[in-house]
Length: 110
Image (tube, rainbow, N blue to C red; front, side, top):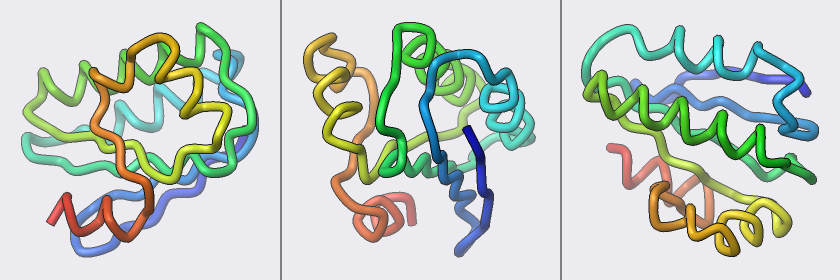
């Protein structure tokens, strides 16, 4: 898995590429390190994540819960069909804030 980070209008955009299977502590560490102050807004682009297992789901829950504790906000956007299906099947789509596109997520985070 690779992570690319950019910032746009004060929103940190993290683009994930590859499988989210919990073998990469880098994801949790990177997102947690971005949560440096209250009000941090993070957009997770999951369009290039073809597969996610239960550990990957747990990592998404963990970073989102951490953001909530620190008064930050994480939005998932551009979900691959597999990831969208997993979140819907497990009903985690009710826990996460999910946007269909990056553009919509950026507008919502403004």
